[in-house]
Image 1 (tube, one colour):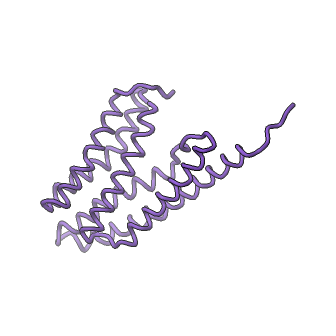
Image 2 (cartoon, helix red, strand yellow):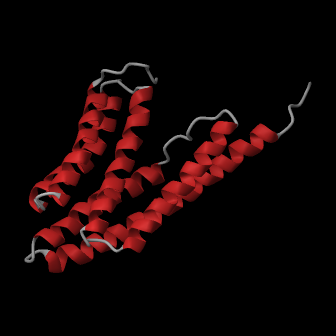
Image 3 (cartoon, one colour):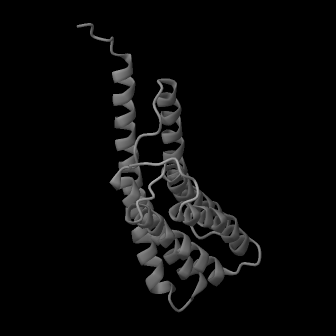
Length: 193
């Protein structure tokens, strides 16, 4: 059951994740402290799993948590893409492919809200894609930070990044199908019995 509580352990984890986003950007873009940025990125990625686990385990699933978790995921992905594109870790077209998916989903969310619906529930495929991307980014950063590990970390990171991108778009298509179904249902005339 979803509660309206705000101060829960999982929500505190999500708030901490959100604070990690500007810290990561500062470490990566400011002093180029790649090792420290890598730690922040790894902690942010693994805590994505932790907040959901704690919410279910402690019975503290909240509406705020349902909104914070995907917001933190998207902010981490966006911040990492901006930093990695500026820093030359990923090419601009890879970042554009991920951002285009977000824009498409944002547009569909605005449409379903016009029909009185909230955001569709998070799909398992979307969570899997996010997890893979949040795993791929630190591996790509590891390839950047360590010349010794780069020959292994680079190909592994890119394999994960491509897999994550593919699943991210597949999940996006599923969300679009859900949105189209909601709009069609809202447009159907009510049947009087």
